[in-house]
Length: 309
Ligand SMILES: [Zn+2]
Image (cartoon, rainbow, N blue to C red):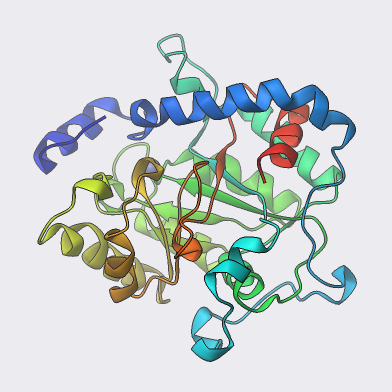
């Protein structure tokens, strides 16, 4: 989906209501990922417990880490070392709600029915996964800091209200924390989270990340777009949370090399893509995630995690 002008997007968002702004443009990626995963599923099944990374002694691993600023630049590993470390599985969610008759086949990758979501999260807890947050991931990637056993990161994009009303209580049940990548244009709109809800998520120990102002494709930014889409929304999120915002997720998972220095200039320590290959020079700015599809049973999700990371 392309949004050539912001007013057009604003109108589209208002019309779409709860429908994620991401849906159309990400379908190809998600479908490809799903196809690869499905093919590999049987093979992965028998090896399903082997592939999650654990750095160091799990029982000694801290459940928190300082911000990237606490790690001196000279102590951070180079790109090759970072790329060589086992990847921590990262899941990307959008809407958590039951499917409606008008939902397209493709949209359902981005809409996880409530019962399916609860079953997916229960599977993670029952399988011994521990959620980690971006500071822990950053410390692990840059210094080799220990992580809890079976680490996983849960991320939620696009500010959808059901992330607060449905996902949050489910995660709370298991003591899980998550990252919420906020598109600031949507704050306070019907079916999107309010500033107060974002603040509450932050206060409760979750991490708020930046996901641009209005979901414009980073590949198309020029001139003032970097300010409008990254600098100003990030400042706004810092005002809302009272905390520095260190992490960014590319709309549609799309990025280009020129975006990395622009993100660095604006205080981002890492950025998240979707299932494509990482950048060899700047792996911290192309950290991979997979979309946890609404079609996926807990077993399929488990196989996808093992297969994709
Ligand atoms: Zn998005």
